Image (cartoon, rainbow, N blue to C red; front, top):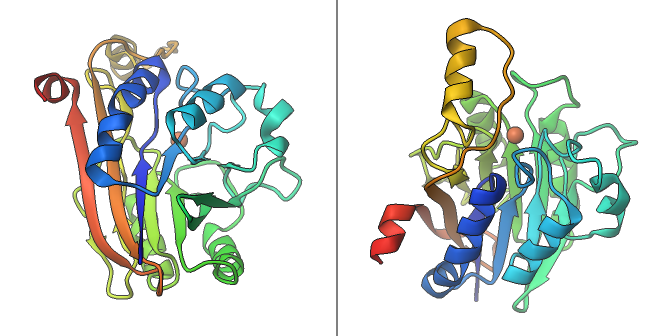
Length: 266
Ligand code: FE2
């Protein structure tokens, strides 16, 4: 018996959300996921997520949502995060923070623990993600073999280190936040499916999803500018992983990369 997990990278703004809506049915028929998880921390115009957006994701067939450093950008989240058991924010936020860092997602007769952690390198100071990972993976393993960790972090080295730290203890360790899919997908010796960054779903011709002229202006002049989510053609990045239910180890892993142009030809 196996569990197929589809993890889709950071959904950025309106372009990302509509790409997800359009492509999800095809991804479902091609990869047969029992459980679909998305990173939603950039879903509302690049900054945070709203109750309505989360509701739409669930209606389209998403089972769980992970977040990151933009979790609190959209203030409406404070009104519903404690009532939404399918959404996780970084577990190493301060202990007083609302919401939860781990959730048990059940779908299609399968169960998957999802854990969200945020890196501490090139990001604001935060509790140690490695120590928190130890604590939560141990807790999760009391209930299920199938454990996914979304490590929302900037530094590739910190993400790779987390992959090794959890090898053989978590089923899947994937990175998010940098929005560029890395080419290092690998099932580590202990059976953990690892990918440094899954990549994003959103505008392809901007800079990490933002309108490129504003970003260029800032790089060139160092003057403050307002970044807005780009419009136009999208690209979508995800990863599909098959887990052995008896052990929680990964048996198969496939990166997914699709552009709007390719999609239109399909
Ligand atoms: Fe982020």
